[in-house]
Length: 298
Length: 285
Image (cartoon, rainbow over all chains, first blue to last red; front, side, top):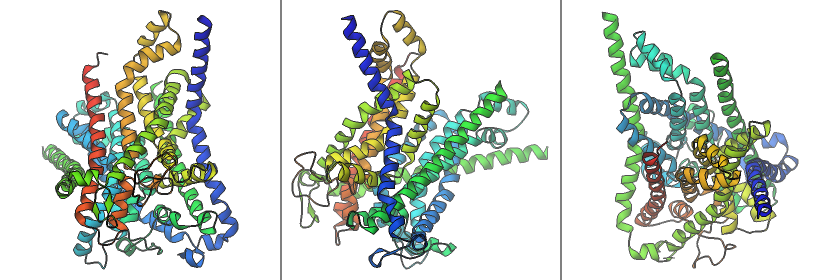
């Protein structure tokens, strides 16, 4: 009896331990399979052609620059929307709203995070893009701007929840100190609470941007998918195509093992590395801030 | 005194501005839900919910897509729930702060940030092609599971950590083993929190399209999938198909499909919210 219990305990502990390591294994596996299918692209397409401005796979033009710039311009637009609104909402929820209001707002923002991106894309096609076409008098409403607005909405919940956690973590004594010195609530928020939560807010912004750059279905549905180089301000009002949308739209139709197939995996690899960079940067900001706080407090 | 008036005017302006921003953020969410409800309700009928699509999907029901999403959600749960909870137990109850543990945490953060379409590529490379599952419910569920894992791990870990240390100490001092303590005391106390995380994770999986595009989603199927190795229709993918790929698609069916998907997801969201607030109000420590 005693012995069988020990044996079971041993097995279960090992299983739990193995599960704990699984996250590392999965990240490694994902990277491995992206490399395995994506690296051959570098052998099949010359780097000068890969980092070129023409994406036209049917005639073997695999220039990924239009896709990169497409992703960047839409993400930039989304960040311009999500950062102020996200941080503003977080400040409202954490510092200004009465308790009952907070109880309503938090689940609502969480709800936005749970809305399937395909539903937002669907409304983007039927409601937002006709509105933008008429309102801005454009030939088509399927533009980078349309994508940016929807992506901004998709990134907002991430920004709000991370920034709100950061604001919540600021000790109450900081605010009380400021009030005692005669600062108004508003001055306290701007000059004490927000600066104290700076690193967490920065993390919120980075994670929001990461969320936006990786979004697929919404941008594929509303941005018109034209692979043109988007480097002018006017590109915001014309159709563009992102890296994610290209993979989603074209992977279904390519022959497994073809050059096109490898290039699409290569784009996936680029996306993976971007998200890896963003996330490691975001978590190191938090880590450094924590260390600094420990130093100050000790 | 002029200064102080300015300060208070500033505060009033600032608060109004921030409040307006919060309203501008939340209003569209409510508007989206209500709009789809109004536009979609006329399409809902018994035939729509229990029938098969016909006339090139321009008529009939969406049963295969509903069942498909159900299968995919259950499939995702089968893989991600045990693995995710076990990983959370490891991080909260066993792991100490070593470089390895820190690497695990960074890996989890990165898993959470990987774009959904990249999960699709990975699922295609590993499950569909390398392991020869084909485009199937199995491959799609496993892909979705890995995507859901970070959500489940981090919420479950947080919930386990919130159980007071004293509970563990008492249980161990009464002669229980570590695993007995975890199973009978810690897990039991943390259950509502874990459940909330699981449902929120599965909610995300149920609404995703990009990871199943090349791993298990079917454009159209005249019958229900018969085994885990069949491809399946799914609500999000179906909505994508009928709103972009099928010409002259009746708008009513599009809104109806969006509504069913929304109800599916919102119900899960609501259940999670209720479980959480109930557990919070009942908690005595």
